[in-house]
Structure formats: structure tokens, C-alpha cells
Amino acid sequence: MIEEFLGYQLVDVGSYTFSVQQVIHIAFILLATKLLLFIIKRGLLRIDNGRNKKNDNLLTVIKIINYIVWVIAITYIIRSFGFKISTILAGSAALLVGVGLGLQQTFNDFISGVILLFEGKTKIGDILEVEGRLLKLTNIGLRTTEGYDKDDVSIIIPNSMIVTDKVINLTHYKGKRNRFKVKIGVAYGSDVEKVITILEKCGKAHKDVIEKKDVEARFVDFGDSSLNFELLFFSNNILTNGRTTSDIRRMIDKEFRENDISIPFPQMDLHLKKE
Image 1 (cartoon, rainbow, N blue to C red):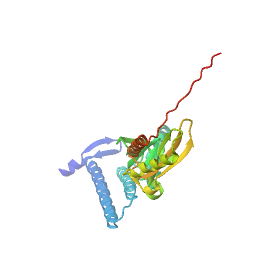
Image 2 (image 1 turned 45 degrees about the horizontal axis):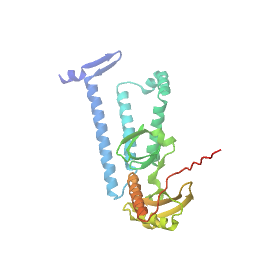
Image 3 (image 1 turned 90 degrees about the vertical axis):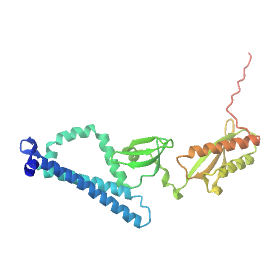
């Protein structure tokens, strides 16, 4: 009874048959593969925790192992049914060429994903500046990379953009600190030294500014309508730097009002001549 059930043919095409036993065989391979990957992942995580140090490359190694094991498992399933991989590839060569031409960008993203995983310079948790937007990475896949911006909006970008385009990795700064600046102009005739003192005072007063001694205000240029300054400071809050700079600007505006320092706006004088 059991033998008849297992031998029942679900599909019969030419010399190839597909029975209940083969379905169970596929299910067993898939379950065994998932169990093997689970054991490998738990083992690597346990070893890493035993060393009492954080290994940023561990998730990348686990992901690469996943891809390799799944390729081997799928290849074994195909071969177990009597299909020859070389014959399949040779018979579908023309089709693969056509598909390849139509999916060039997809293959490009795939290869870029492999490069990202093996190279290890870009990792989960890194903060990238992509097309003027800050993005904290949450997942690096074979085709796309996912992250969220300072507004908690999930963004998915193709891997080729990270590999081939100009991308700034803010987590690679020396000393793990990031420098920001606030630009401001004051009216001509203002006390330059007083302005610099106020700017540095406001920078040092904010809780998110680190290394207070490195807060620096600079007199950068004589503008068309103003004396131009910039305040430079360090902070660890990369994604929320917009809130930090906003707070500092509010503090500067308050100090300027209390000290009678005005912030000018562009003006144009029009002289009419009578003829």
C-alpha cells in the first residue's frame, strides 16, 4: 500500500516521471538544507559570542554560506531526477543569451551584490550618503540594498549604484566621528570677535555636540550683503544632524537678538536718472 502510494506518478512526460516519492525527496532535501543552515548560523553566532567581540563580517559570511548551500541543494535536486546540468545549459544557450540581453541591469546588480558581500567595505549598519540622502543600511541582498533615512522611510536601491556611483560612507570617518557645519551671515559693521564667541558658545552648549574643545567658528568671506561665518562641530548623530543644526541655529538667532547683531537679507538699490 505504502509502496504503491510512493510510486504513484503525478507527471509522466516522455522518459521523465514525477512521483509522490520524488516530491517527498525534494521536501526532505529542502528541510535538511534549512536545518543545516540554521545549525551553521547558530554555531557561528555562538563562536562569535564566545570571543566577546563584535564581528561586523559575520552576517556577510552567513549570507554567502546561505547562497552557496542553496545552489548546491538545487543542483542536487535537478541531478537526482536524471537531468544533466550541462545538457540543460547547452540546450538553453540561445534563450540565456536573449534573457541576458534583456536583464543586463539585473545581472549587473547581482554581480555588484556579490562584490559588496565579499569585499566587506560596506556593511549592515553603515550610513551612506546616496544622491544627497543619508541612508542607514538594514540589509544587503544579492540584487538590492535596503535601508531607512532620517524620516524612517524605507529605501531600496540597486547594488550597482553603490559599487559604480560616487557614494560617501560616513561610518568610515577616522575616529568614528562626523563633522558638521552651520553657515551664517551677519551685517557689515558687526563685531567679528563677538560673533565668533557667540557661535562657539552656541555650538558647545548643545548636548549632541561632542569634543567641545574642537568646536570652531570661522570668518570665511566678505559677502555681497554680509560677513559670512561658519560654525564647525563634531557629532555622532548622523541621521538626526538636521535636528541638531536646527537647534543650534535657534540658539544663535536668540543670542544675536540679545546682542543686537543683525542677520541681513540681500538688497538691491535702484537709482532712477532723469534725462
